[in-house]
Amino acid sequence: MRPSVGLRLPLQDYLYSDADLRTVKRAMRTLTEKCMRRYKVTHDFGPPAPAMGPRSITDRRYGLTDARMARTTGYHLGDRDPRTHPVPERTPPTGKALTVIAGTDERTEVNGVRVPARGCAGEAEREIVGSGRLGSSDLAQDLNGESFTATKADPRVVKAFRAWSRCMKERDYAYPDPMAVMNDKRFQGNTPAPLEIEVATADVACKARTDVTGIWYRAEVAYQKTLIARNEKALAAVREQKRDQLAAARAVD
Image (cartoon, rainbow, N blue to C red; front, top):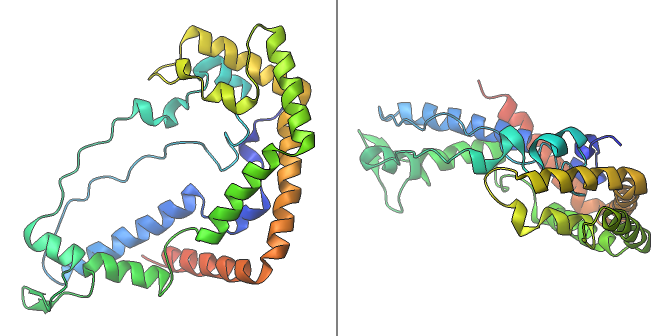
């Protein structure tokens, strides 16, 4: 069984990936710093945050599917696990830097130059997103959540869950479905315990034996295609907005 990280769902055309968001945030930071130079004000924003969490929208969507990670990190995320990367303390902007970055509700000047509405951060955002909103639309996110929830109750998926559960029970592990084992409180520590490795390895083996991931994925692909057809006009606008925002972000020097 191949890991699910490379699987692609139809609604991903309308959603921002982590890489997309990093592209936009990098451009906005560049534009914000460029704007701040007009006011002869600087601030150290610190290095960009490292990539954390699942490697794609489908990486852990159907539970753990990577046999190598099961043997080495269990249900943890290895180098991408936030539990092993404390959030660095960053010095927030103050004084003139804060005024220039965030703006105020008043007609404010810094070093003789008028501060734009919502400051340099607002100016940078407007240059990337225009009059829209940054990132994935509510519609695309809602449909993505709906398809995940609905397909868990699909009869074919429920049947596959039962087959997977029986396979796990043969190994003396009692879980009703692949998401339940992911949420086992015993596996929520900072590092994977030996039992976690054993269960994770059995989990992936049972997924391969029952094809639960493939069955669930195929059901969700079909469901998402139906949702897209029902919301075709609205989603076309969402996709156009995403395309324009990413194009604007990539054009930033």
